[in-house]
Length: 199
Image (cartoon, rainbow, N blue to C red):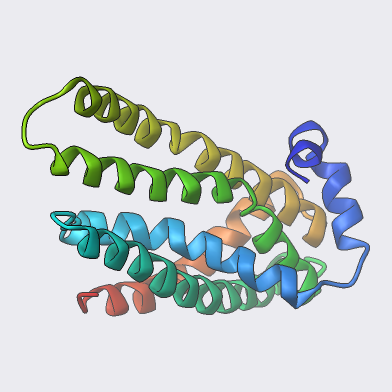
């Protein structure tokens, strides 16, 4: 699927949207989206305590659980808002197709989530070293590279989302962007209200 989405995203989304959605596939992809977001939210809010193996696995479990729940709920809600605001632009508003776009555009974020877990493990190994060693230097460099590299799947995911939504709602470029921005503008107050509470 990654290869198809890379080579010909429009045709791939046409194929995806021509079939009934499978919630068994959709919901885990929603979760992936949430895991990616929650990782950065926690990192920005208070960072990660990785001074022990227990803290490491606790952090990973927290990201996976909170991110999955957040991803599923937020994608279901924002997807519905995109359907509602789509009426303003005379969009084709099949909610299941919109959900399919939200889900399948998150496929590149699977790579990012793997990088996230790998980076956290690397940081834990670095902190476990009593003295600076060749291993800790190498892992530090790899961690920096991996964190920078996470930008790539995020950008790819955003591009896929735009292309997919355009196909699903049969809108031009401007209306596709405006429709999504309007939905986000409606969602934003609720988002910031939730973010007012610490994880």
